[in-house]
Length: 331
Image (cartoon, rainbow, N blue to C red; front, side, top):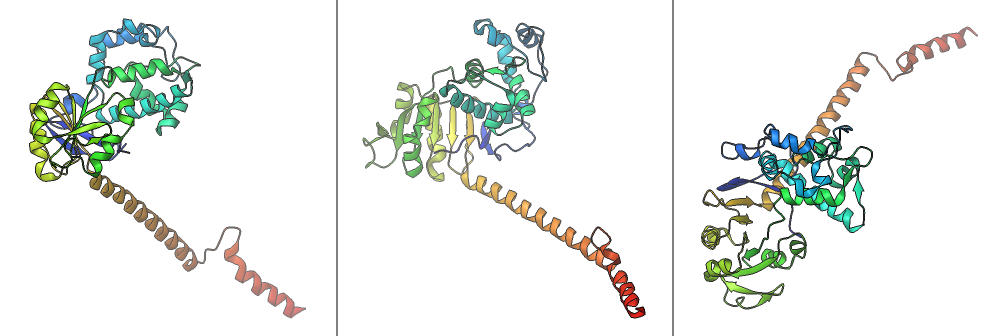
């Protein structure tokens, strides 16, 4: 199953970060899109239309829940532009948890329950949902279907997407056969490889096309997302052909930084980097544990030197024994 939500992106190039890490969001190229900005009067007016004057620790109803058709599109777009990159990744996790609840015919969920299902604290969840203008109802929580719709609109999942996978090796096969993509609005419609022996062979029900046909096939099938699972050497050429075919979003598994036009979004997934980040966290915990152990040993040693013993008067025990011995001798 492909890794989810472990990367971050920059327009025109790609980068990687740890999943869920609280790192500074945005840089010289992307801060305008990722940094949170004050809400506009239109956004406030939209939210106020559905509040009904009720609040409970930041939970309140919104106009999206009372009438989805009454959403002010400019305000919704403004909110989407102000969402931090890390919050966008968490919205995708919330959507997965909400979809699971919907499958169980659960109609409402509290912020605490949803936060637990998503693996975050409830305060962070409420803040993330406030970016999309979603607030709960006092004493009830969030309506599952309504919140699913709000997140899907924010993530652009109401648009039609089509995915092409380039490089049908082990990873490409796994991606092409992954059943989770169509169910989340990302059906795979095209596969490409350089190996003539693979061309024409169906993988996941889709015949593999030759890399030379990327531009024509992507244009005909209106591919919006290209997944690059090729070796490093050919990744840039594949990227160029995808862009020429009208692809505007690229998910790159090749360990190389791709050069793309300004209007193309790239997200890089480097599994080796993710493992190195995990190794760092393990090493840091071990260092902290070792430092704590050394500090505890130092305290014990200091107590022995100063004659301090365990709580309860243990330090005076030798003197008490000597006094008892002298009493026995007198008897």
